[in-house]
Length: 285
Length: 302
Ligand SMILES: Nc1ncnc2c1ncn2[C@@H]1O[C@H](COP(=O)(O)OP(=O)(O)O)[C@@H](O)[C@H]1O
Ligand SMILES: [Mg+2]
Image (cartoon, rainbow over the protein chains, first blue to last red):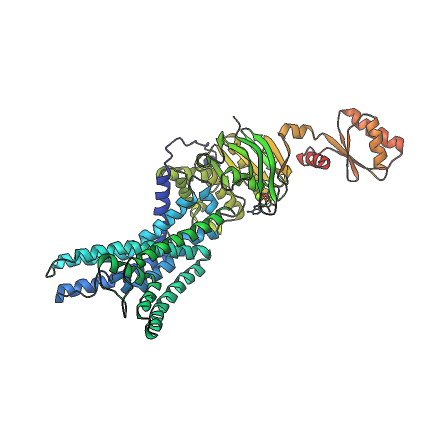
């Protein structure tokens, strides 16, 4: 022990990488954290089971295409159909990205290094966004590859697939910013999970109720806006306008025009502002 | 070159002025920053790291402007916060490797450096276990390790002995001394206890309510502390007067008198004065040679 202890101090004169390396390293570290990689086995259970559930419709879809030459479900509606699973993934994993550093006051150890608050928050948002994108886009891609391999009659639905993947990216940015903002407001992990899931359930429950209430009382076109309260239907509405896909709602239609995508952008901006304010406060403590 | 050059630095919080026109310079080596709780020590460090905006004044760290070049400064310095700042569910190795990478070290270099510094701070096998199970002493060592993992030129250690038992305190102080000497890293270390820093510091800065009380080499402090403490049952004032007449430097300190030692004649003077005035001598104590005592003496004048 003592002879090991006595090895002299060595200075470091190797390379010191720039900030894009640092931010990339932080992003990758956080992304690995979302999937529990490098963590104990129990941290992997939740993200990987949810990712596995996301593959069920893909398996069913490829099987039916191969056996009865029919498509069940479409690419554009995949995120809406699977929304509960995506929401649970967000609720369970968003707190692991932001809560520990806030709760245990680790932030000063980052901010006393070349990392800035903006880079720190940016890396966290990027990690959660990539995780959610993978969760949705990987099954879509597997389904599309299966579609091509089965060689269904008619041209492959390439346009619809690309539209769905693009909207998966938009959905991932929206969910990660809002989810992380909610999780960052409650440094206790359990509360973070609860707050994200509560907001999701409220929005999902409220959307058809608002729609029905307005529709019944004669405000038929106003009722359409009710659907936009749920983030998955909001992004679906944007997809309808951008890519001409069909609406995946139980009843009625979305309001047309650019309004849904503008609401998405406004929500992302608002969530980023909340995150930035939250971290600026944490940094000055 | 000065390691730190601070000029007229003022920091006002809504209700308190944490730093009040502080002007001081710091050279290489180990420097102690001493002051009571709330004196402004942590605030000063956070400002030097660019973590807090200032109200007025200027500061340079390693010749770089603390307000416009704080990104460069943070490349060259290390920081050990005073509060707990470690996530409990990762191991010391994982954390220190990760933080080395956050300082810009490539992956392999980060691993090597982390293993090196964890060994230097004395964390052996336990470094692979989650930090949550560590003792306070081990946690303080991890905090110190992350502060030096990127081989900084200067480190800010905020109350590193906080919460440690006497033995842990001793080991931490020895480690700090080694970092300042063998490792060749300049150190600014804070404490609210004056006495504990004298062993490890080359220089001590004393602040109070954000104002500079004193900044001097440790040798000046200890030289100035050649005093004896005299306590009499009654007539301390008369004794002080008589000693002054005899050419001694006397500072009243509560019921006691602190007398500066000029040589053997000081002891003679105390003996003669008490005998002449027929006073009852309760205590005659040799100066304890502690910077604490100097500080008390100085504080009495402030
Ligand atoms: N973020 C803050 N907001 C308001 N007041 C603060 C803040 N941080 C420190 N202070 C005040 O500034 C003064 C100096 O604090 P600090 O630098 O922590 O002292 P020290 O580290 O010497 O104990 C104290 O009166 C403290 O209450
Ligand atoms: Mg302090």
